[in-house]
Image 1 (cartoon, rainbow, N blue to C red):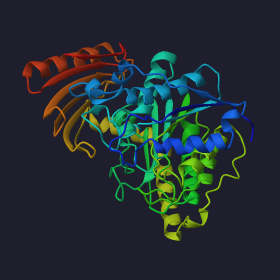
Image 2 (cartoon, rainbow, N blue to C red; image 1 turned 30 degrees about the horizontal axis):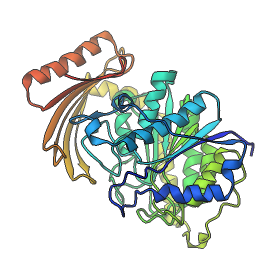
Image 3 (tube, rainbow, N blue to C red; image 1 turned 90 degrees about the horizontal axis):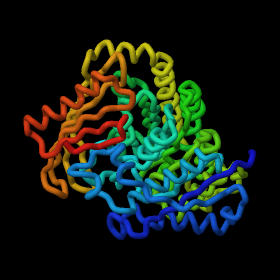
Length: 439
C-alpha cells in the first residue's frame, strides 16, 4: 500500500440524542476517537484533522422539503453533522488531502426528500446535502454513492431516484428481514434514470467472503462503467458480526479491505451500534486503509465469534450477482424501453412510516419525462401524527438544466395546486436557481 493524505472530521454531537439510552448516541464516536488517539493515528503526518463547519439552512433546503419547514424539525447538531461532511469534501476538493472521512452524527441516509420528522434515526440526509453542495459550488456532475450500511439507504435512494447522473448502490441486509423493509432489486429508479439505483439485498449471515464477492464481481465493474467524477461511501458499520441491530457477519478486516478496493473520495459515517466490540476496530481499519497504511493487525479480540458463511448463502449471493450482471449489461435498452412504455408522465404512490416519530405519511409523486431535459417532479404529501398536527403539502421540483417548457409547467403546477387549496403548504424547489420558495 502507498501512503495517502487523509482528512478526518469528528463530531460526536454531545447535545443531541433521541433518548439517553438510545443506540444512536455520542459514545459511538467517543470509543473510536479514544482508539485512534491511543494508536497515535492523529500524530501521523499524512492524517490531518479538521473541525466541522456549520452548514447553512439553504444547504439543507437544496435537498429537502420540510413540512411545515426544515428549520423547526432540526437542531444545530444536524447542521454541524452536514457541515462536517461538507468540510471533509472541501478538503478533498481543495487538494489538501487525497480523501476524507467524516465521522459525524446524527446520521442521515433514511431521510428522504420530503421530511415530516425523524425516521431511522435520521432527519436530514448528510451525504445528499454534501453531494448537492459539491454540485452547486464545484460543478461536480457524475457521482456514485456506495451505501454499505446494513440497512437499506431508502432516503438517499428517494432523493436521487430520478437522477441519471447519480449512481446509488446499496449493499444491505435483505429488507424482508430488517428495517426499513425496502431495497429490493426491482427498485431501479424512475424511467429516465432506470438502473441508476442498484440494490443488492444480501442474506442474513453474509460474511467478508460474500461481501467481497459482490464488490469484486459487481460493484467495482459498475463503478468502472459509470465513470463517476466522485465516489462517496455511506460508511455504515452495522454489518459487523457483533452489531445488536442486525444479523450480518462482517469483520474489521472485511471493512478495511472494502475501503481499500472502493477508493472512495469521501466516506461519511452512518450506522454502527456495537460501540465497544466493533466501532473502534472497524473505524481504525477504515482510517488506515484510506490513508494507504497497513491495517493487517487490526483484529477484534473476539474474532472467533464471527460465524462462517453457509453454502446456501454463497450460492444465493452468486445468483444475485449473476442477475444483476445481466440487468446491468442491458441497462441502456432497459432504460429506453422504460421511457417508451411510460409515456409523458411516471407516477408512484407510497405509504411512509416515521418509526422514531410515529408519523404515517401518504405520498404521491409525478415525474415529467421530457425528451429535452430531466423534466420536473411534483409531490403531494399528507402526514398524520406529525409534531405540528396533521399536515399536507404540495411541491414542484425543478432539476438542474431543466428546459424552459418544463420550468414553466412546474411553476404552473404548484400555483394551480395552491389555487385548488387542498393542501396546507406549497413549495417550489428550483435546483437551477438554488432556491426553495414557499408559495
